[in-house]
Length: 398
Image 1 (cartoon, rainbow, N blue to C red):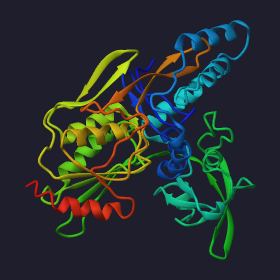
Image 2 (image 1 turned 90 degrees about the horizontal axis):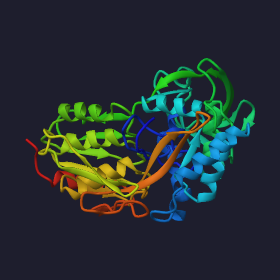
Image 3 (image 1 turned 90 degrees about the vertical axis):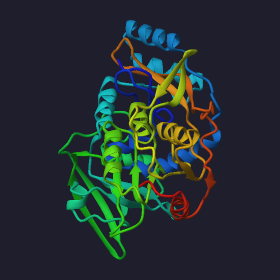
């Protein structure tokens, strides 16, 4: 069973790889349809103001007892465990069926079954396509950014929560099962200006691209590395991107909308920019632990980190470490503030309980949970332009 984790979607957080912390966000829901940033923004805003710092935690022994007794009585162990978690008030702990847990392991490898759409809700409740994954069923069908998604399998989308739209695209109306299999059909009703049409797509097994790199055309200008989530391989992908960048113009590390992921990958990314040293501390039931960067990082290239209210968990751990260690200037708006640590364990019926066991802090001892990371320069609008200005004043990495 996996080690300590922390992913961040209330009641829908999933767990991570063996002996890793998982500090996540809405990666679990986003990955299955490709709705990383846009679905994440709505989910984050709906709970941020309600969450207390270092709030209640579900009691592991009580959860395990409830599950075991339910199984003895011929009932659902996962359902009994979920009831205990619900009563505890711990919004970050959750219970998964065995199938859900397996599904999430695939998501951590960057895989999902879907049609390759990102969606967001616009004014008036219209659901619009905000991104289409290249090579996906949606892309092959000619669906484009800005198209309205009016209905899925004949059921209207307008005014419905984005989470519900995501679940329907996935083939799971309740958000609790593994969703539909690759090859299953889904009919979409779309509109573009005055045109209305329907298309039937077949879901496919796709891979998310969690690290994207924008290099300036011609000479001059910084390289922007956007990290959507910390799935497996993210740290190595960032290292490759940094190695290929022109150090004279610096880097923008864009963590806006990053909902978290594997802490091991966040630490691996920190190791790209730090020459060893502390990244974060965390506690597991009162026992203090520490996370350290590996040596041989690029400590010379100028670095600005972009964050916003959708920057969560592992992304906060990374931005907080780079800020506290004086390695980067952080620009944007205050981050979400999720710093609790979850640890998964198997229950009597094979389901998995992922329960809060502690909280993490930045190298200077700053508590992230409920507080978030405050940027060095707070910018609500046109943050990237301001970040580029800041970067131009940081000198050269050559």
